[in-house]
Amino acid sequence: MEHKALHQPFELYVSDMECWHERPLVYHFFEIVQILEGDGMREVNRNRFPYHKGSIFLFTPLDCRGFDIAHPTRFCSIRFSEVFLAQFKNAQDRERISQWLKQLEHIFSHHNRFQELLIKRPGDCQMISALMSNMVQEYEEKQSYHEENLQHFVTLILNILARNVTDSTGSTATGIESEPLINRMLVHIRQHINNPEKLRVGHLAASFNLSANYVGEYFRKFTGESLQHYITQYKIKLVQQRLAYSTLTVSQIADELGFTDESHLSRQFKKHSGVSPVEYRKNAGRRN
Image (cartoon, rainbow, N blue to C red; front, side):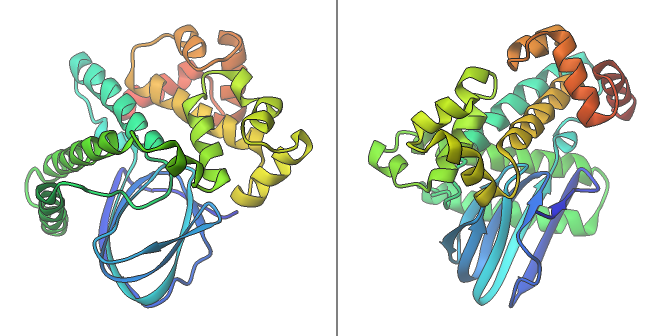
């Protein structure tokens, strides 16, 4: 599976497409997409879903997405990393950003059903459209304080989306069960990333009515990577967030995210990030 990274903390663009030339890619950043014109199908983690004018979608890091366009499509894409929201200047800002990132995690994880986000309040739809239109203008003109303004625009949009996600979490059991199995499995992994017992093959097999011997094959078939690799990458991503934007000790982070102990976290982190947690935190401090 081909991967794509965000080379700066924030990108915004309006694009017109008649066809999607790339294979579905795994993007390592958050993304909000609003369809301005057109319709077709989205491919998300090997599942296909329709889209139409006005659709709004949320994507998390490690989701694989692409488009199969039926009619010429115009869309607005807001892509950002945690760094964009976390340009703090003091300890108070650091704590505020730490809490915001946890809320962001909650929003994206709980909506992570790869369906259109239904905005129920007409006023919210109008506000989102107006905010995104203003963001495009601010991003293109790049006047004084445009970065700070864009940051505020993003947080405003996410606050509006958050209340709609919260309103929709009372879905019926039937609605949840009708979701594709791989989507429910990914939601389960993200919600229980701090509980190794609930991430074991045996538990996943029992929870999703699969043979224990087939769980790994099924996961790779629909995501393009192994179950263990996905879990590890997602967990390391959360460790990086905690190191950069919180005052938690390495031991506290290890306890929160279900590592055996601090040394276990440090070994895993250095293996996948190339530096120790202490070095990573020090470098993150320099960047901010």
